[in-house]
Length: 545
Ligand code: F6P
Image 1 (tube, helix red, strand yellow):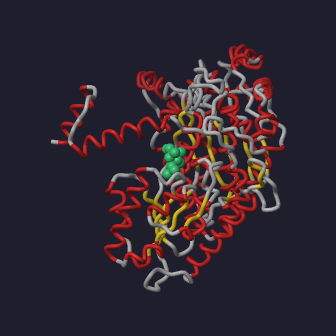
Image 2 (tube, protein in one colour; image 1 turned 90 degrees about the vertical axis):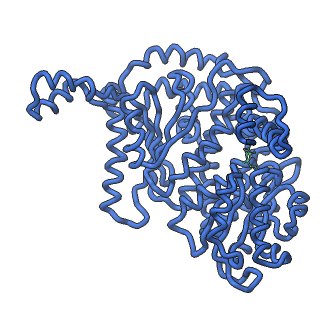
């Protein structure tokens, strides 16, 4: 069974959205609120400890209905069934897409090629638990009998960003182990990290689904060379473990089969933190917290699978993104977590969203003639307010922004929390309302300025407002709520990919650069620069001289 492959622009809903857009594009959010005083109620979703307020978006009930119609017309419901049912929905790589199975309870059945994969998933989870417990308790030690103090995760892309983002986000829950992440092939990255480490008490976790990624293999080799300078070669087996689906490559590298945590080809790299790729998460915060993270993600999966589109968080947020991308021609979206712990979330989502939906050929193999993947960026508030918010408020671009905040802080410093959240609420209100000329004049008049100064300053102080935002207010940053939040974004990626009629789970675009880098590296190694354009030629010559 293949995914439905409907060009969204040929649907009735798309046509209707196009003409509806003409009616609503200049309507100010303030007027929408004045017209419907109950707007916050009708355009929000309460689910578990999440409150999703999407009322400050440039939509009305008709927009919402038409967006849901579009989702229905492209057969999103059928696609969801195929996705969770283990169909080969990653058609260009001939794989199922089942990161949801990694967080399904052990009594569930998820079938791939006629086989229930849950028992294998459960067995790997047990291995992760056993290993994490032993490392954390110190019962499994390094080669000199000392307990481990430092964990080094070596991986890149999904084999780095997921575990790095989650361990940072859950820093509050972490134990005594120091976790480091080495990803870049930039040798300064690996050497800088190795510098402070004690080889007797350091455990390396080499994470690579394919175990063929240049960056990871180079960094792992450098780490192993460093290690054997300080320890006997036989000790490698006590200090290096791997997470991979390519067992032969791992054993060739010199890591024993017992030290391999497997994953499967139906787990995409950027969706893999729920698998053994999350080993450093489990080591950092303990297996129970890792399991709770998975539970939160599973609850969101169930919500996504079973809830009517009108009340379905990933569907609504995904369709809003399409509304701005394809009708307002907004090019980017900002994600602003009001929690310093979540400072890596935007970078993590950049891979998830942009690697998945940065495609320009549709599921029929034809070039698309409409916009697909959005550009994602962001930083935590309030820091972001003092950096790029000026452009969101008064720049010329429309940038829909998502605000993520928590009712309770983790250290329970209420004074700080109230200040943080006052900013959180103030920004979305300010972005929506802006400041009118009359308001600016009132403010300036109270400062006793001359008439001339007043006139001169007024235009700069006017804010148009009407900047759309969505607010996610969650009770508290816990492993469970974090799991649900990340799963929410994953499911939203799926929704958008289905509507845009693209394949979200391959990444052929990354390959070209890799191929060229291999060719150029051999030219650098042999100092034989072959035919290139004059720019690349000159750069290479300069580098080699
Ligand atoms: O950047 C391309 C990519 O394939 C990502 O999708 C993946 O997360 C990353 O490279 C790392 O791949 P691997 O885990 O196989 O080393």
